[in-house]
Amino acid sequence: LLIVLGVGTLFYGLVTVTEVFVAGHLADLLVERRTLKAIEATSDHYIICGFGRVGRQVARDLRAAGARYVVIDALSENRELAAGVGVRFIEGKATEDEVLRAAGIMRARGVIACVDSDADNIFITLSARELRPDMAIVARAASEDSESKLLRAGATRVISPYKTSGTEMARLALNPQVSGVVDVAPEYRMEEIVVASGCAGEGQPIADVRGGAIIVGVRDASGQFQPQ
Image 1 (cartoon, rainbow, N blue to C red):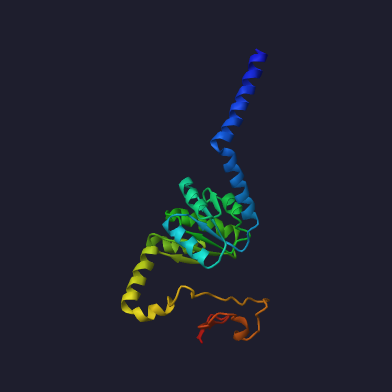
Image 2: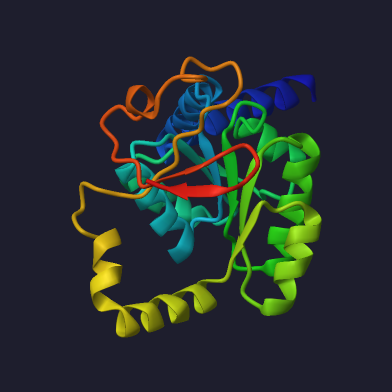
């Protein structure tokens, strides 16, 4: 009996090891390990929760701006899409604190909650706000009722794709020339230059802070906007 059990256990172990090599599980484990190490070395990045149509567009725009980002999504098919474009991807639910920590939320610059479910976006916002009270959180709302709930949950900004697209279409129809000023060329885009307390640009003239940018307006500490 001892010989039979020992030989059976040995053969079972050999079959399991062979299956790992043949089925490619070992390669997947190595890729996942390299991805986690790369994420651990990433800081000042954005965390995209959801890699659907909206999430993929967010990733494209962040990539075009030269920003670093990590994607969290629970669907395995989206992992293949992310791997095809070299995206750092974590397969899991962004509603879980451990998954957000694995994505480097304590070192991240902001969180973008754009999964298909408003309930999940609210929960992601709550979790992210609890872990990082000082972080910027942009959340997607499919329904108007969810906008106020996301703001109460701690979202910095709430975007409704349907409302935003309708507003943009009306703006383009009413003021096509004015709208063209913003999208004058692909190499130009509207951005913010934050001059925080203690940074090198504090107290310096605008010409010394702007670098290669064209300043169109300044918002002071009191919130007043001054066009340039």
